[in-house]
Length: 296
Image 1: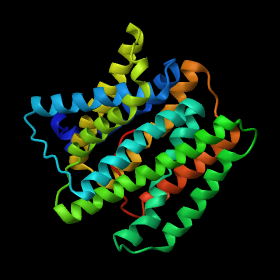
Image 2: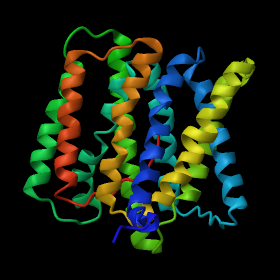
Image 3: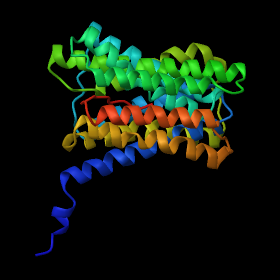
Image 4: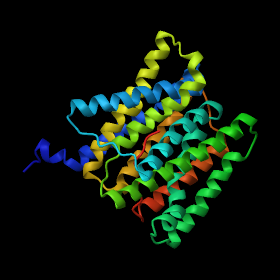
């Protein structure tokens, strides 16, 4: 007896498809950030303002109540999320897109150290091995010829990865304290905080051309806003490990889009470092259940 279409397209497969689609949307961020002839603070302002508004509208349309909270843990989530967004855009502008995304993707390795300290989880030998290997991969990004801007961009990308890890840590902490996995309010408020932070910096540079506005509408509404909602839906029927592994499509495709659009080539050292970092994360993710829910 042949399988029906419904049985072939199981909830698990649907979730994988949704997460893959979200990751592909995320991966286009580097390309458009590179293409836009705008200051990174201007890009961050419009992208995050549009993203926050989009998620509010979509949530209202779906009649999904958003529970906003402003306790210390929630504020930590909001601040670290905004740090991810701003630092990633600046890093992508001043170093290669590959460096920015791969150094940010080292975030799970920081959790190996942070979780046992703050959440009292067990620190295992496999995690230590992953940390050492990943740090070796990160070091390769600083080999070869580096301009001052590339060096600063690499450092900011690492800082974005640290914010990435802290955001995940605070979400787990919030789950323990508040018994909730809701992340929508943190993402909305984090995006709006980015807009508030950036506005004084770019107040005299708010004018945009029509093409620039269209790109920023895509970055805010689709690349962050709608893709987050898609990703959140996809999490329902897969493990945290599987969602992380599937989400790695973002790091794979980001430099490809940038190369095809602006011809930017990562260095050999950066590609080697990226392979090491992703391999370390993949190996640890398949042996330890690490949970990261975030977009950049």
